[in-house]
Image 1 (cartoon, one colour):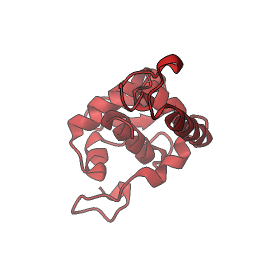
Image 2 (cartoon, one colour):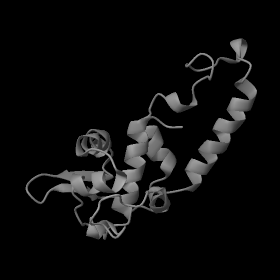
Image 3 (tube, one colour):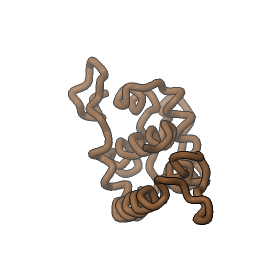
Amino acid sequence: MFPATTEVCLRALGILTTTPRGEIVSGSRIADRLGISRTTVTKSLEKLLDSGWIEAVRGRRGGWRLCADPTSVSIRQVVDHMEPEGHWKMCLEEGRPCPEEEACAFHDAWAVFVREVENILDSKTMADLDGFVPPCFHPRCDHNINAC
């Protein structure tokens, strides 16, 4: 439903929210856990740096750290930050906002769907993202992020 970069950020935030507050998680650990490249993790999470919710920690023991209280940031805030143009809710036929005067065949049903999804995203916070993270696929992992 969301672009890949947004989904990577949501899944990575799910990992960061289940990590003890202030702990740094390496990009490699996040990448292993998500089954994607470290480069993809870095490029995706860099888009959240100006939000103040996370920070990048440079150096040998660097990585990513959650700065925000995960219960205070809604999933909608994250999605809106990642997708300021709202591409995920564009018209199914035109790939742009669907104006009322030129509404497509899907307009009414799609508008209801988008409102419902927005309500769900408003009702969930970063703290709810732990269920959005797949089990780790790294061979040495016991499915605990600290073991990856």
